[in-house]
Image (cartoon, rainbow, N blue to C red; front, side, top):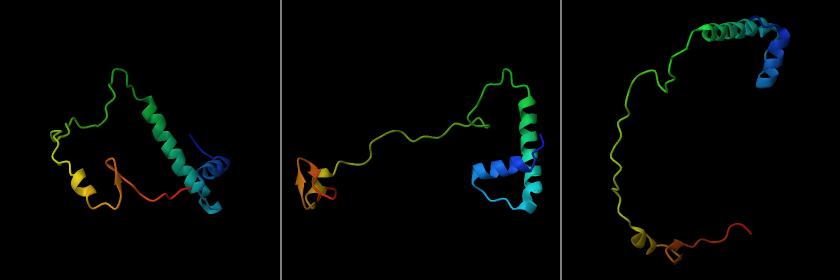
Length: 95
């Protein structure tokens, strides 16, 4: 697929990028090559091919979901300036 000057100007306006007049032909060629690659990929027969999230068949190593931290709320609230019912009280910042 070949793009012309008007298509490149339209695409550059949509993408909010500046393309100089002397670069229009170069950009048009590069975009045309990208669109040609998409056409080639679209022509590939993918019937019976199952989609995959990653090209390599790997398993992510996960750590066991075990609680390791202890509850220190009481200890931490003893140094807080204001606490009520287990909650930290802070000055009002929005009226």
